[in-house]
Amino acid sequence: MGLIKTLAIILIVYYIFKFIGKYILPLFIKRVVNNVEKKYKEQQGFTETKSEGEVGETVIDKKPNRNEGNKNVGDYVDYEEIND
Image (cartoon, rainbow, N blue to C red; front, side):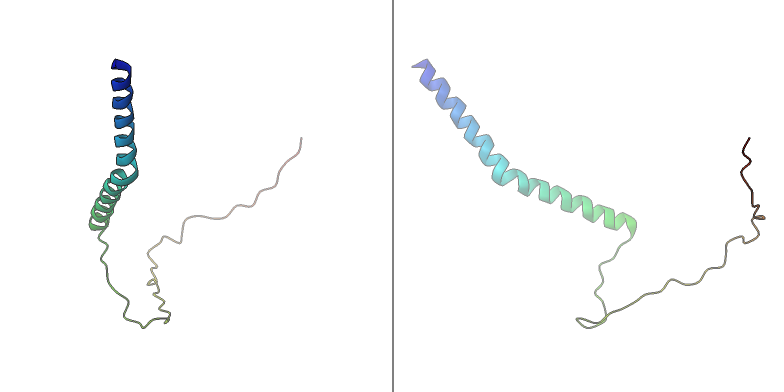
């Protein structure tokens, strides 16, 4: 009698874990991933805006030209390998 009871408990626990892993765990993981994604977007300053163009229209945004770099960084020195 004790063996049958033990096997029944093992089977019940097995099917409970199987049910949780198949149906409940994916929902929980999806919610956690969505929360992390939302926090990341808030932290990075992303805003969800819809494009002003119509469906199928191509919109190209160009970066502004910035000439803030130091162009006088040094001279280019050409060299040759010397074989001994």
